[in-house]
Image: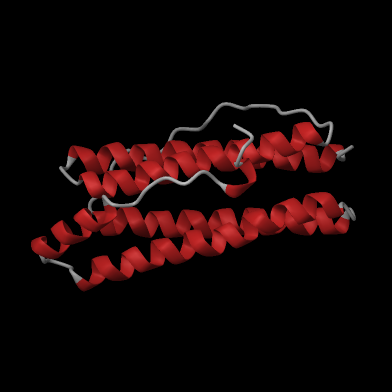
Length: 173
């Protein structure tokens, strides 16, 4: 059985993951509305990944005898001045999520809940990838700043990204 304190914290993280999904969905439709279908694709895949993250946490809570409590999702931003601005917001958001995951891990360690700490290790590794991905795209956008052909080529590259279900969900959905 999981402690009430960790259950509440994991439920807050579930809500944060769903908010993240909603944010990336907003970024996706906003990019597509500007004719940037590749950027829209990249953000839509992020949307799906964030839903996976929430589901992993829900599955975990249920497996540990906890209760999943879904809360309303707060409003998200709906427009950005440029794709660079959207990806800078993405990186800032992912850094915030990293801090939240790290805090959850610290809480699990303090409570000597080894199972929860072990489960959260996957999220810690995932956050390294999330931050690296956003940073790489920011660097690329800065390189092509003011070059419409460069943005066009980057849009085509991002259109090739495909969704892969998160490993902890494999065979469970």
